[in-house]
Image (tube, rainbow, N blue to C red; front, side, top):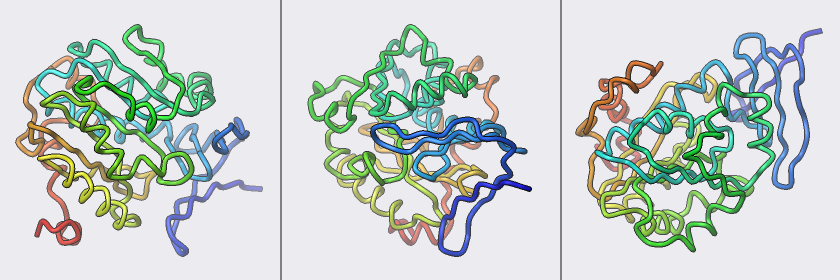
Length: 279
């Protein structure tokens, strides 16, 4: 008997992965968490029925989430991550020697513990001495955050369901704006360009109302339906101008991101340009 996990992106389309064994299944205080071993994509992390990462292609998502804003900023030192309990964002940030501190605010401690146990290649950097892990609500944390504290804020959240709903609101982006320094950057994952166009539009226009510079870009991620979007808000530095600094040690160890992809990722298809009022 064959076992398959299917995630539906619409009523008529989804992605299926052949399962070789179940690794973990349980429910935390906030959400249902499953870890499965697949034939082609290694172990996968599933939260509330949605795939968060696979061992095979998580690098594409995490590299593009992090290195686009980090090479846009000339000197990112103090960093905040909201979500990101799997540790992939932390791993990529720790590649940058200019970074001095990383505050990770994750609401669900169990996500961190499970990823450290079952996804060590993703989560190992969570033990880095630069990382300060705070188990609390990211929305409340930012409401009480001192002004101008961070150079870069990364929002590595689940889809806008459950505890993540508030992370996609204009009010939350305003809190992020206040917590950033005068040349700070906010970057968020903003959904599928094929199945969540309304979400991308909502995030982009909200970001545009808050930040002087708002940009949406794409990256190839097979597990997420082919492509995924990110929306960046910046007080000063425009990411479409390309990388503002070079770090060969970082660039030589990446699988997806490079300087050409940095600029090319902002070239959006016509239907998204129209949707975002950029045509």
